[in-house]
Length: 351
Ligand code: AMP
Ligand code: MG
Image 1 (tube, rainbow, N blue to C red):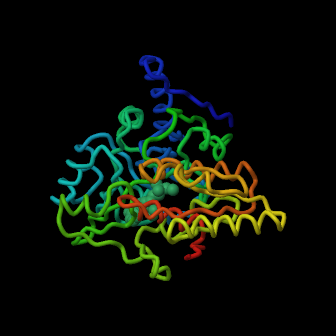
Image 2: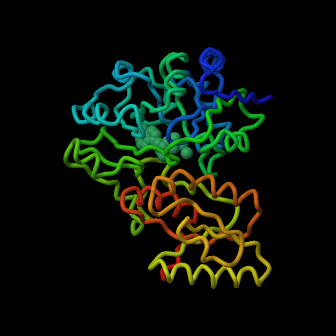
Image 3: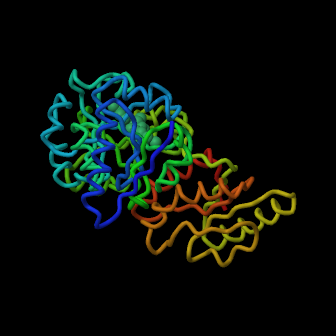
């Protein structure tokens, strides 16, 4: 199958509309299309068509018990797939939709079990990206879309990343350039009495508490509970992994830099191709291996935005081992570290 990459170009409104309409036609006919959202690129299918949803699992190599997020473009469409929308969820939608927030509800009968990985609940998000919203509308209102990467690989933040994984496997990629946020949505489960955060993201627990008061955090997310199964099925899988071994170094900044320099030197001397992940502030102090900046500590959003891209860049450089600083930044640090720890298979050196 040839994969068409359709570029969305600012100012070319009528051509863009044609491209989005072509993509919507593929979706309505039960096919797959990759498209941009503000978090990461998604791999979309008609969420209410079981055969279409099933194709997503096949293209990604995704385990069949890992449910998909249904993307909608307006509030009226939520009621048609969610059996009960609690008042707290409505407040959250008012505050954060369209945006990087996914909410989980008891599903209605029209949502196939193929889309929900066999669960009686459905995850729903209204994305904050104009191309995604137009596509959802044109495709009939409901697009099931996990991240558009091969299962286990870093999520795509550029159309090129999607092509690396999906070329020849899907008919179309809508290319709208780099995404804005770079990590997946925050997931909050409203099928529980007290809403529970199942995946950390750009919208933090503090932001949620300000809107709805009491919330819980899935105990399965805590590093010390790594034996406890998280409630979101997808959170238990090894994820985001680059080809190389990734090791995080955590502690006081000066010690971290010294340790990474020592480790990188040792690895280079033993003949390994080494990568180092630092920041705009620290990169000049690294002396061994291929050194890349993930972003600026002074602007933590840049770290989230480049996280997956930098892992893919090191894949292309064929390094054997990557040493990285850790990024427990003030606001979205937990969301960043949740991804980094998985990418590293939880290998952390404390200094
Ligand atoms: P992705 O879009 O690739 O980030 O994957 C979707 C994430 O949402 C996975 O971690 C799923 O386990 C989670 N998810 C989707 N639907 C549900 C649900 N009904 N209950 C719990 N987690 C869900
Ligand atoms: Mg994913």
